[in-house]
Length: 131
Image 1: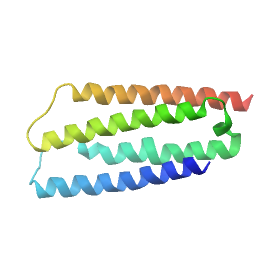
Image 2 (image 1 turned 60 degrees about the horizontal axis):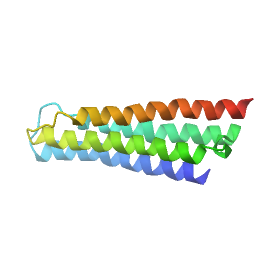
Image 3 (image 1 turned 90 degrees about the vertical axis):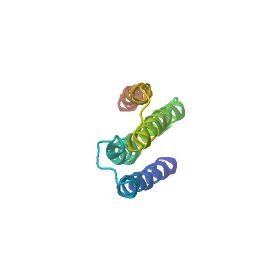
Image 4 (image 1 turned 30 degrees about the horizontal axis):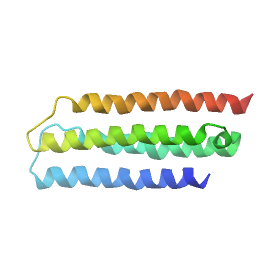
């Protein structure tokens, strides 16, 4: 359970840093256009911080963290977040510099797909604990 708390804590810090980073890098670069960095802060908070707080509560109420494949789920879900925020950060920085790479949205989409698998997987793990 402490692992879930620390994971939520780390994502909270990363979410705060992402918000500050977006504000400061666009101000420093005199950038006024549109960039995906604006959504990075929210993605990290919702998919990382708040989501792991919910999983922590589910662990307390239903011991979902004691299921057989929970450790594998934890790794897969975090890989999905890392792919998503990595692609978003890279694309946002390129947009600020007036560039873009066409395949980066597909990589972010892959990260989101992995997160979707993680959501379903967690619901299956929860279902096993509720029975």
